Length: 276
Image (cartoon, rainbow, N blue to C red):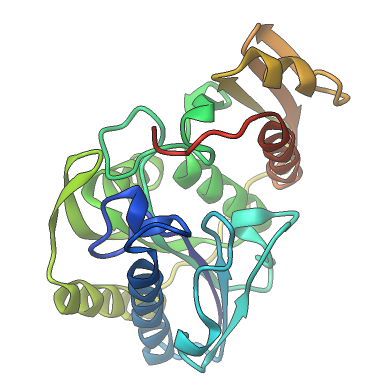
């Protein structure tokens, strides 16, 4: 069994603040170790289910958060950036399942450290007219590649968002949001045991992949900055619906990769903290 883990950070056990998840933050070094422990719990669960090949993609921010020496030795790590498929770099049809560790709810939701990819630079996103964030877009892209999402871990709002997209995905709430920067935390050992058990059970009973037909999808993004939207119109196929909202059509996963280019353009035009 080949298994893929996409590891974000905001939804990791115990983390609630930008200082926990941003390099230079006063608790970042602790946060990156907490991230590795949640990922290691998922790896242990995958091994218990019979996984023989495990790839971990560090999918948060600078994508250099997980210390290689802190990762379970049974897994390979994809680290650093740029990555053409950013949060899904290395995901391939040959993988039997994907696990999302440490994910968070989309922009506008009252979840812990909620945002969509770029903090307040992205105000809203829609996939085929449906509100979407990192969870929904990762799920839709993985399905298009032909890999089912087996498990997602994060706060209770992230778990609820995943359930809206696909109720068959097993979710593990490692904390319950009290506000955007506050949570009722599940004890760390209990949370990691729950992750390990959920991954082992889900992969042992994993359903076959459902490949989504390779039709065209529409991705729409509303930016905080009209400058970003205006600049993106220089990319062939990108159109605007108003001064701050752009969209493009195409098949997933190609559309996901193109969105990564949009974010690199936006990052070159803005320089604002992600959690204001």
